[in-house]
Image (cartoon, rainbow, N blue to C red):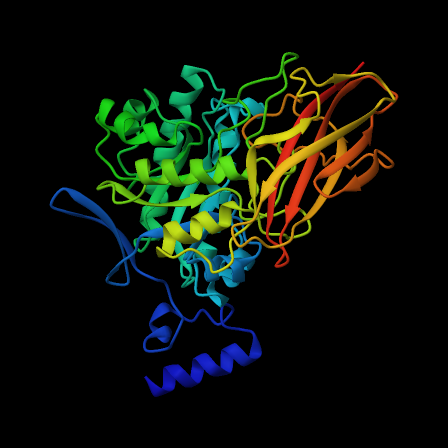
Length: 435
């Protein structure tokens, strides 16, 4: 063992560990090196994830940003959508694990699952990624694809499941230390196909939003026998939300979202016998219909109200200082108009109803943006960010703002951000139409 340790240190200093072909037994007895051994185990009528001999329930998030805040809130794992050693290294530095994504081409993006050459290249790439990363100590689970079946035909979906099974079998041949899952969009009859066509999978990853609380009953309805991980959850999605008279989705306030997170988590994740844990979406910020819809942080890094709820769900303790809250009136005007259709270049005064649990003095910021929620993207596809309209905010006072409507007709959104002195924030927006 002394000789092996010396060899390891020499190679590490020279940066030649992989080049020298050093095998796994070199890592014996060394701290934080070598693969974690993870398995899915069933005890009586309950499934659990076992990591290095200990039960491991996933309290995770999607993304690799703001990891210090994740750890402070009680999180223990992060999820990626593509393979990355840097992602694993970042996680290991914070004592976190990783559900590692292995990207697959999607039929909705034009992938042809009858193209044998494309499939061969895809398999080769994925297996190369697995070989490169399988021994990283932060690795928890392999996730083959993300919502590959979304918007695919029934025939293409079956081809996708068959290909996922082939890849799962190949991964198992080179890595016996980590479970393998695939991630699907919601639940339903597809569970029957997956159970039949993908027997090698250890569990199923489910992305679910507005219908998260229905997942356990759907699992039972379709007699799905394997455990599940909620690989994405959050507020009601834009596709599930009520709409304005002219067809724009109405986003919940951060306070409404926080209450929904709590209720849905308790219904589908907490203490469920076949649930291995979850990943909340998104521990960071992206543009998806708006820049606030699914995000736990604003673009500037300000933590949003829902993080307090996740800390309570993960640890059983609320933070000492909680984020501000949005009242039931949301954003309103003095006349309480319901239509929110305004004349071009008109000046309108809006108010927001907000409060703070500790009665701290609040800082309220506003901006008006062109609406982008009617774009055709689905399934989290990339969307360009939308900047605030300069000069739209005429004046502010307390919880009030005067907005000058644009001169160009169209759809817009008025955003409000309610900050407490610690920088925590509550958010709400109002769809507007200018004619």
